[in-house]
Length: 139
Image (tube, rainbow, N blue to C red; front, side, top):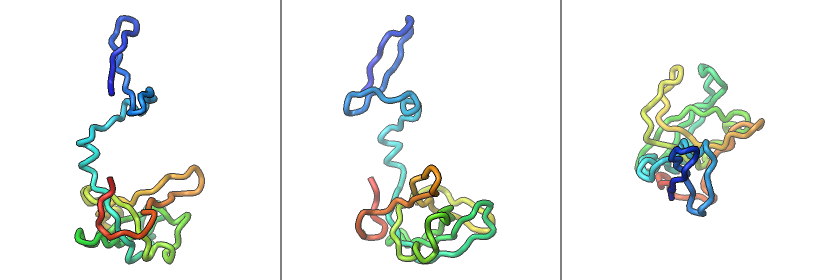
């Protein structure tokens, strides 16, 4: 929802959310259209292999993730603060799978594993609340 208001003889656009409350300016400046969000392919996958990644600039793991019908994709993930390799194998994660591949040192990362960036703790992985089929889309 959007409406206009006059402020010092200028027309100012103020965005409101579906609860009809004004959004902070930093959110207003980064608003996406629904069509933009629909382009982001977030999918559930299961980590099937984990290796240390000593060549990475920041401490990271190399992950191989099974996305069901979408196949297996690789990712570099800076999640070593909270997760051991053993913690990750068999764990379902959520990743963006439609970014172009990115070369990180000697490794081609094909998806972006999503997590919550904690203040001091490190990255906390996003994952489904219960086990689901690999490849299912997040909306």
